[in-house]
Amino acid sequence: MTEIFNKLTEKDLTPDAYYVLNCIKEKVVPDDFVNKSIQVEKLKRTGWISENLTLTNKSLIFIKEINSFFKKTKKKTSQFLLGQDFTDKMQEYVEIFPNRKLSSGKYARVNIKNLETGFRWFFENYDYDWSVILKAAEKYVDEYSLKNYEYMRTSQFFIRKQCIDKTFESDLANYCEQINNNPDEETSYFKERIV
Image: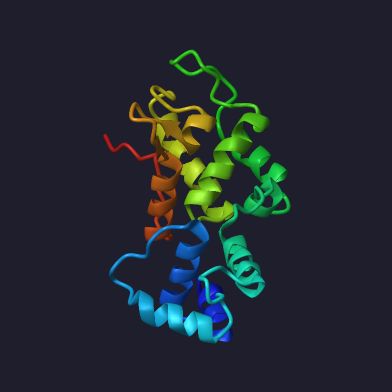
C-alpha cells in the first residue's frame, strides 16, 4: 500500500484526485466527500484530464500502473512456503505418528502428498517453524500413546480439519502454541509408582 501512496506523491496526485480520475474512467459520479470541482480543475491544469473531462494518455497509463498492484500474485510454490527441504520435514513429521490403524478405522500415517496441501494451508495461516511443528507432533502422539491412541487424529487431520461451518481448525497450531509458551516443559508420561 505504501508503494501506491509513493506513486501518487511522485506524480503530485492526492488520493482524492486519483479517486476522481477513476470515477471519470469508470463513468461514475464521485461521492460528495470529495470536492469535485477543485479536483477537476487541478487535474485539468496538470494535464491529467482534457478540457472536455476525458482522460489523457498520461492518466490511462498511470491508472493501469496503479491497478497492477491489485492483480492476484502467482500461486506460491510449496518450496517457497514450506522451505527448501519440506519433503524431508514432512517425512520426519509423518514418521512421528504410529504405523497402525486408529480406532476410527483410518491409518495414523497419511501419504505425504496428502499432507502437502494441509501444510501449505498451515504455513499460510500460522507462523511456526519446522522444529516447533515436529515437537508439537511428538507431544501430541506421546499424549495419545498413553490412551492406546484412542480418538487420536490422523497425521493429516492433526494439521487441519474442516468444521461443519466450512472453516478449518488446527490442533497442530494449538500444540505449537503450547510449545512456544512453555519451551522448557518436559512432559514425562511415565511416573514411578510407590507402593
